[in-house]
Structures are given as C-alpha cells and as structure tokens.
Length: 507
Image (cartoon, rainbow, N blue to C red):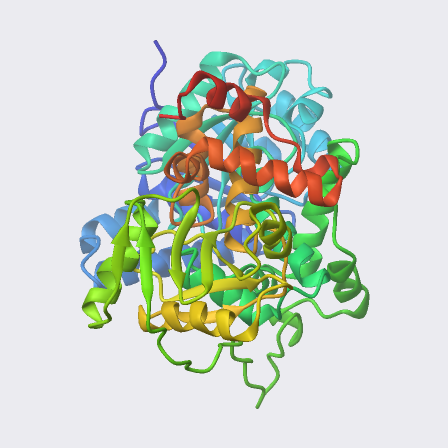
C-alpha cells in the first residue's frame, strides 16, 4: 500500500519561476527539505527570498506561527547543478514547455538521483508518455500539474503516462493530499482534464461572437450573472493572455488530430497577430490602457409589465419565476405543464432554449410569438437573462415577454437569434467534453467535476450541472446544435447517450 512521502524526504524543484517557486513553497510548508535549482544565476536564491517573505506575511496574518514560518523558510536551499539533487526523493520539473528540453533534463536526472527517486513534470500540456519515452526507466515519471498560484490553488492533476507505475501515481496523489491539496488522477491525454474540458468555455463564446450574437461585454455579463461563472470568457482570455490561451487551444486541437471540437478561432488568431494579447499588452477584447473604460453589457430598457402572466408546470425555472414575481408584487396565474412552455405573457410564449433558434422553434411549435430564455445556474438568484426572439414574433409580444422577465427582477440582454444562446450551449458543451473524458478513461466523473470547480473556479462541476439540467435535455440541445451547424463539433458523447437510454445520471 502506497503512502505520502515522509516529511524528511528531500523534494527538489527545477525552475524558479512563478510555478516552480510556488511548488517549492508548498513542499516546504508541507515539512520537506526543499532544494531549488534554476539555470539562471541567482534566480533560485532570489525565489527563496520571496518564498520566505511569503511565510513571514502568513505569520503576520496569523495563518502560521512565527516559529513555523521560520522553520519552513529554513527548509529551502538553493543549489547550482543537477548533481546536487542526488538525495532527492522527488524531483518536480517546472521549466519551459518544450518536449526536447524536458527530455534532456530528465535523462540527466536519471543519472544524478537514486533509482527510487520519483520524477515529476508540472507540464500543463505536453504528453507525459512522450517525455518518458526518452528515459531508461519511464515507470517512475508522472505529471504533477499544479495550477497558478500553486500555494493558493487547491487542485493538482496527477497524470499517468503509458509507462507510469501505479504506485508512483499513488504516492504523488497521497503526497499532494498531505500538502493540503485536492489531487485528481488523470491519464496523459492532450490537455489532461482542465485544459481539455475548458476549451469549450472559450470556444462557444468565440463562436457566438463570430456570428454576431452579442458583444463581448454582454456575453461576459450573461456568463457571470446568469451562469454563475466568476469571469466571463472574454475577460478571462484577456487575463490569461491570448498568446497563451491560443497556443493551448492549438496544441490540444493538433494533438487530437484537428478534431473540430477544439477548432481555434480566427478572431483570437487576429488578436495574437496584432499583438493584442490582453491585459499584459494593454489591449485584448477590452482596452486596458490608461483612461479606458470597460464597456457595459447591452440591457433592454425597462418595458411595461404585461397584463396577463401565466406560469406553467412546476419546473425549477417556473418555481423560481413564481417566487420572484411574488416578491415584486406582480400578479400571475399558474397552470398545469404544457409541453415545454415556461410562461405566457399576453400573446408571447416563453420557453427555455433547447438548442434551436427561436425562429425554428416558432415554426416547429406553430407558435409565432416565441421568445427563448437562456439557462441559468439558479433562476432564483440570477440577476441577468439572455433572450432571443423569433423572426415571426411581433414587437408587442416580444416586449411583453421581456417585460415579464424584468418584472421578475432580471436584467435582460437580447441576443441575436443564436442557437442555444450563450450559457446553455456553453454548459452543454462543457458537459459533453467532460463526459468524453470520462468515457475515454482520462478520469472518473468525480475527478472531472472536482478539477473544473477547483482548477478554473467553475460554479458547478459540468457533469453535476448536466444532471441538474437533465441529460435528456443536454442531449437534445447538442442534437439541435449539430443539426443547425452540420458539424461533428457538436456530436453527443456516447456516454451521455448511454446514460439517457439507461435513464441514469452521472451520480
């Protein structure tokens, strides 16, 4: 039975940049003697000074005792060459993302450390199997992928290559757990868990922007205020940097042999070509230069309340709408469920998007005055909803539908008639990719949900969210998107299909 490395085991970290220094801080805080190596003269010593300053700040804030902070700082040692790591029980590499450079380093490490030393790479995208292919003993190599900043982010992906010994992955898992982290096991496939599944968050927003569905500020606001995401996709890409984000997307796309699900965006390519890399360059989707102000989301001005409101059924959305209307002293009546109708407002019929455009839905249901509303993480708490209006819908009916939502306390953003709006298509695609990761043995369902909550701060794991929406509805949305676009990009995961047929969810 494996267990965490003992606290007297030496942990070595190669690379004294932000990630390497953060990992060294985590290991020192976990009680280990830590050796830090960097090929830049003085970089390791400078990083250790910074880590010790962090420990002192933690002590000043009462998060560590002064004695513990002093002891943790004393466990750090800067070294000058790979040979100095001879007594390490674990070496974590956090250097440039280049396969050949990493292979060269690990080949050198093999001759410098003991046979029992575990070798780990903090790579976020390079195949652990490929790195290990250059080694004489690839069984002791695994991925140990921390997220930035390593001392604060809880998630660690423990990544097994084709040759990684199970006990090595287990030891790393238990060690990360002992360090106060939340580890998840993953198989070495492109993007591992987080960088693979998260592609959908950016890709769907970029697709909607490309089609003129709405501006960046409006789509960001809908994702935050309706979807519950901490940051909208465009502001998040600006923060990450388009050079980095676009490079990861391209890497995953190429690694999956140009699978259209990961297709990069021409819009983001233009930003990179122009040098508009986001916050770090002063301009991305938004302008960050001095004096620039961030644009506001497009919000429909206040409209009159409709005279007649009827809510149908007892769905979570219908119950939340009833509660909000009651809280705002708006009168309405309730009726038994009527297909997928959520409410009527005068002559308007409101439905939650199922991946069709409002115009197609109006034709299919023979209801010209159709208005679709977007998915919300919690309709009772959401502050904004996106809507789309069928081409056949008259202005009075559209105004009644929007007036109903405004009366319930929502800010309303009207998007162009884009299939699946923004939150629904994004969440279903996140769930679809998460399901494929599970189906392909990359990780289990619990791991993918944990990884996306902790690694990128999603408000809910994508599979748990799919359970809440209903897997049959998720499958319907994906099917309608696939019909609209005629692209393999929106193919439904076999595992979602299986669960729908089996009448089970991901619990």
